[in-house]
Image: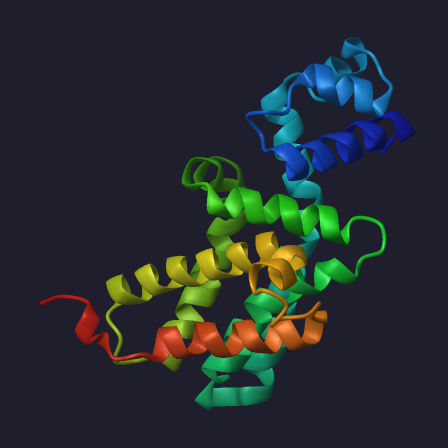
Length: 212
């Protein structure tokens, strides 16, 4: 990847994380990256292609890490399979731990929080290309860990769980202010444990809240 292309991607990532996709124009990306419009068209062709590449360059390695963690858990657990908490941690921990990346962690976790929190952007930029195979693997593992839970109920609960993860990433830095000082700045590992416990409890809850 050329330095020009990297500058464009970095600028687009920062702007989208800060202002959202709708409020980020190619003109603002060009100014932030200190390039011209021709450079953007040469490397990406369109705003939509640029956004897709912004997401893919982080989501690709992230999803490979998630799958590697799930593979290892399944090998180690053998026929009984990994626990629900282990499966959830394999899914959420890599993205939460991105905050420790000194170069792009805060920016990208904020960006993903924005995309996950907006249904239109979630379905357009994350689900089709980057999440389909990952989704099937993790849903299969969760079904084995929760054999009595109907698949429809599991899928709804998984969407609720992704919403909780997205919300946590968006409010992380402002939680001390939101809580009136009751919650301080929290480290990544502590919040990972909190999130895993919350999601696992929701996934494991009684199915009576589903169909009447």
